[in-house]
Length: 381
Image (cartoon, rainbow, N blue to C red; front, top):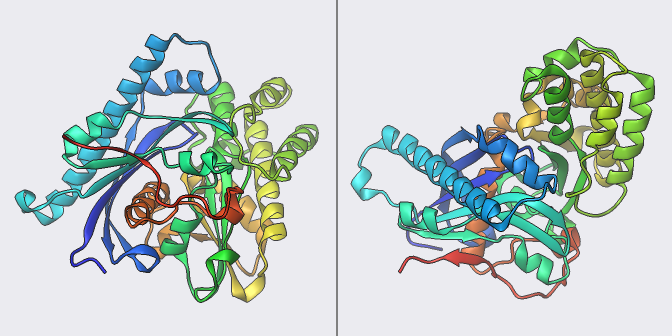
């Protein structure tokens, strides 16, 4: 056990490409016995940078100069978000002179993911300079080099953050929906499962920009006012079911935007949003039932990620899961839904610093005995 707590800052920019989240986390202990407590969390909207990043994600041709500039601007956003998270904590506790971040961990912005090719855009050096600490990045690289998909990356951090006496499935409603299936607390790590399921906020937010002319359907209001369009539901269900059954991590070329665009003029905006929500919810629940070994009283479903604020989506998930066992919000367990992935980055950073691999072989498909503890760091000189 370490003699003092470690203060680790996790940063996450997901495939929804709407904001960077930062979580300052206090880590007690080492390795798989560590515990994590959230000290502060903030989000920094990407603003005018968001459409440029979406263009890169959608493989719009860019010069190397344009990509380099985009990476610099993104990294500067990370610095601003990190500094806000630290300032929030210091505003509560004071004594800024005595506080220091031990490690920062940044996922970076995925602009291409089709293993073995994957790029999480990020330059660690501005963050290392601003915080005066080491920066861990390139979290997926060691897994991919060992033959894995590099994703899902959070099952081990979910084990640290969410494990309980009963079985739990943690569902992240992000740009893509993914899930971690956790056994009861005293089980073996080999029993943890993780999987990418299907499109989620990438699809919903694209539709909102297309037909509502807003960045997203706030609280799912448009979807709540709409009705299901049968033809669109069938087409979407076919696409999302194929994604959930693929057995691979999802990414580039999985967006499905063209299908949404083709139906955008055939039904009302509210009906489009409602149908999208239904297709996503049904696919997620079907995948959960196929991959979770527990039901009823010994099984909990926990929702996190920005999509958990979409009341139409959470209502549809609850209706299809079980009326007697409604899903829990991550907030109810002390981890704000928007902070879950950034906090997971901090936990993974602690595990990496302790020499442990960040991924599970049974989840990503990497070689089971690949080199442990490999990552990329920006080291101050």
